[in-house]
Length: 203
Image 1 (cartoon, one colour):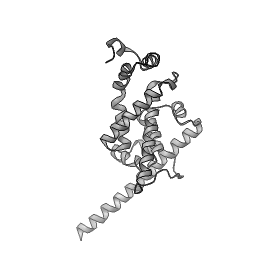
Image 2 (cartoon, helix red, strand yellow):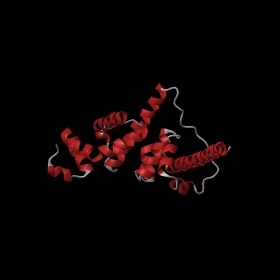
Image 3 (cartoon, one colour):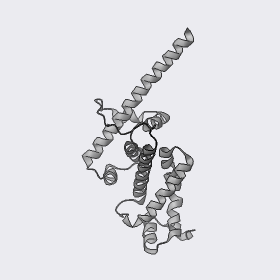
């Protein structure tokens, strides 16, 4: 267990000491700080507690092994979440390859309506949004979660995606529009089903 005084260190200070001293016990301090958050993100992709736990363990192992690559200009949490989403996306890709029955993701599509897409997306119910996130590609899902759940800035998204500012903004815009368009489609389908069952009951 890390020394009590070291618990007051910032994430970046902990990283420096772990790198300098190869201190695996001190790395446990970072694990304690972020294990729950990383696990929650893994659950949103794995949908199975055991698999999510395994995925989270893989994330922290990857983080420890790549700790020397961390650039101190960014926050450790930003880098950690970047690694987390990358591992989650890779997990989904591998799962898709081994499951022929799983629906394919990632269809790129243009939508005409865009002016109010961000406002409309934010107004969606949480449960509905969770369902909709399963209907877009894992890369798109990760992008939205980084932006709206983790609060990453455009600059931080640029660093994670290795894209320019205009490309990041365009990808966000198109992904928001896709989610909003899907929500409208699901709403129409729900209404049609409700009308159908109402018709059956009234017969």
